[in-house]
Length: 201
Image 1 (tube, one colour):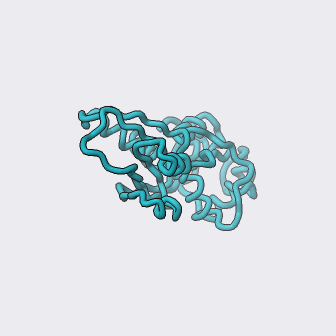
Image 2 (cartoon, rainbow, N blue to C red):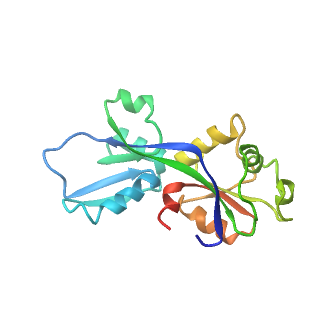
């Protein structure tokens, strides 16, 4: 990976589910997908192999938007990188677990660290620590990057790492995959990303 190193992963586990919008007697010629960019990674891998239909893949709305779209009936199926909400289940929408993913924390290679504790990560992403020298690193400003508000990665990371605290002093990046290049460009960069994106490099 260019100028970025994985310093931790497994800080949160994403449950990838597919919410299906009803049944049909045969595969449609064109399948619309809305939702998690993490789940979409696997769809893009499947598309060249699965010849019965073509996919229209929209990931900008991320997990929250995918769940809204399936409830509104505006998509054939949706990917959500979390457990489906109660409203979705009450609506009778079928959700199927298709895999599990981890959240990785990556830093720019200018930061010589082999690992950060959960307390370190909480300090970084809540803005309590603003310079890498506070964590035993070089005299460089800490530049934390987080994914957009509709991404399950952001919500799971906050719940698992930040607890009752909220993000502060962070740069919001969309789409999720752009975190990798953002961290690589910024000498003090650190970011959260679905591990599935890193596994493709």
